Amino acid sequence: MINVELPTPADVDLEEVVVGTCLLESTTFGKIADILGPEMFYDMKARLIFTTLNKMFNAGKPIDLCTVKIAMEEEGTLEQAGGPYHLALLSSKVAGSMHVMTHALIVKEMYMRREMRDRMYTLQARSVNLAYDIADTMIEIHNLIDFLEGVAKIGENMQSLKEIMDDTIRDGELRCEKNKQGLIGIPTGLKGLDEMTAGFQGGELVVLAARPGVGKSAMMLHMAMAAAKAGNSVLIFSLEMLNVQLGNRILTGQSNVDSKRWKAGTVDAAEMDEAKEAARQLAPLPISIDDNADVTTSYVRSCIRSKIVKDGCDVVYFDYLQVANMGSEDGKANWNRELEVSQATRRLKLIAKEFNIPVVMLSQLNRDAEERKVLRPEISQLRESGAIEQNADIVLLLYRPALLKLKEDPVSKYPSKNLGVIIVGKNRNGETGDVYFNHNDPMTKFEDYVPPIEWMNKNAR
Image 1 (cartoon, one colour):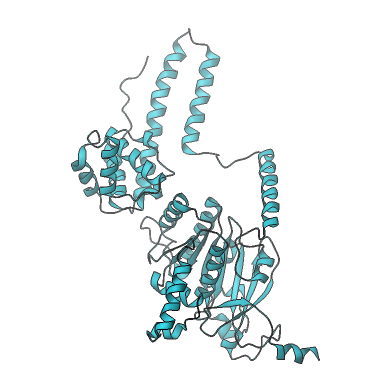
Image 2 (image 1 turned 45 degrees about the horizontal axis):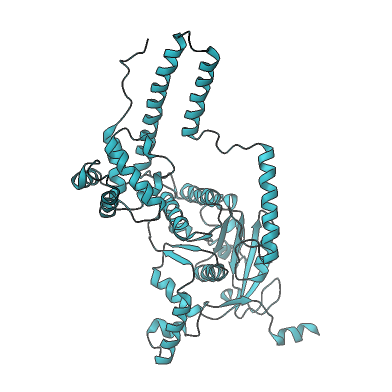
């Protein structure tokens, strides 16, 4: 009646590789946290280890061979899992995390097949046992299908219109409440830009683009500081500059210490005291910076998830797209650079939606404007991929007329000295236009633009 010759779908070696990879590389678990659960492991030792890994990850604790060993000792499960030697053996079985997601999906599939086999044994027995009501048996069949679809997460994002409308009203009420308290979204540090965008919103991919040397990173830091000062938890991925280099920019931007003298190491004792006082005041701000130069989508997701668990994450800044390696995952080579950039922007947009936070991505513009002698940047100049514009909710083009040897901005006629322009070239949920700002010479301080008195007097006549 029951076919006892059916094999057990399981791959213990692969389960050990998955667990061993998590022990070997601290960021690995975040890549598979949404894929696997402890119950999906057939091998009891691997299941016990994965259970501990899951607890540590949800608690925001660092994961490595030593910390897991200590945690399992405290739980009293270390010896059941094979002891310290078995943990070390598992971590020695793998060379890296390149294929861990593929391995995790296979472990999950094996679990689903075991559940299918075992539950269908029961259904097979009930199908020939006349003591069981046929209607109840059919309900059990549907329950099995529902269970398997739940594990596979099929259709989990589908909602009825009633659910959507309920969520929409709640979102509207929340926006009204936030509006009473001030800005709805994440502030940018520029009043004109806040008014045009209502602040950066959850789920949005914002692109800040410019030619090299115009001040993308400086503007990003200004926005990040404004967000943090408003109480938002900020995460910055800096692929080009080290943490201390960004720290130098933040410190000189938030104090009266001259950036050139600070860089040259020629500040006097009074300036050093001022720098130390500024550093003391800046230290409590909720900003984290990751200067890993070789990031993948999985790495970014893991970092965001870890920060959310530890102290929250309200906005992410990514500096910058063209040096990222996010277009390829699991060691797969991309067809070409344009496709890689397209994949990277798409993945950052998905990350923004997944965590419901704005992701602000810096990008370069190509030289097309210089070749065609176009004075103001255009969206069509986004470097290497039209998909950047397609995936972005907001596109901001940074422009400084003084760099083009212009005496005034050709549109506003404002004098070009220390003038900056953010051209809102795309705003999926709002208006487009120009936002003007003042900056100092080293581009460390920004403020809303106020035309010089002599200019206003001249133009008033």
